[in-house]
Image (cartoon, rainbow, N blue to C red; front, side, top):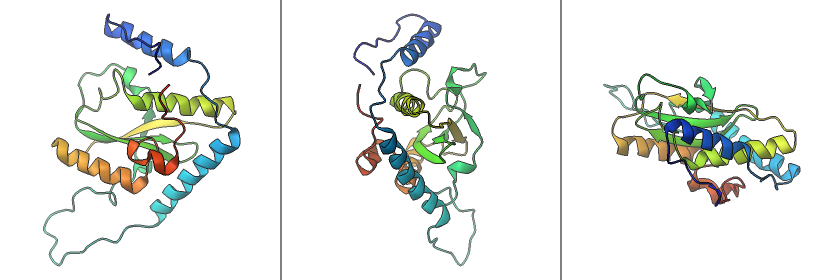
Length: 196
């Protein structure tokens, strides 16, 4: 968060207004040159495209009694139905269940972030660093007039057990090398995650 940003101490509606105000009234953070942005995005896209084309070797079993548990081989974030990345502003009748979620730039076919939650419909209400990364990413694209279409997709079959969800989340982060996850920042020299 920028040092001049203060969350509202009033109602949820006031908090949402402050979030929106901050998002649209920031100074330009698009210092990354166009060629550098394009090259960075191409590197990530090429790696992830190769991951999709090259399935990992799987250990077989002589007697498969139960279905295989979810794994990096069974979850393809790019095939999940996309939602607008601002889905969290909507009104929901329920909190939603456990899920893994994926922030994807559909214009570039790039998986930017992998996350997990116990309440899918409430995960991004309030402060979430990835919202800031997304805003910086979109701002950089728009300042260079590049196509960008950031969406979020949910995989609603995640375990209710937090440790199990987090293990699968980490496996997916390592597998896809999603650049907005802190585990991969140094790998990609991700320019959108610096503190403002």
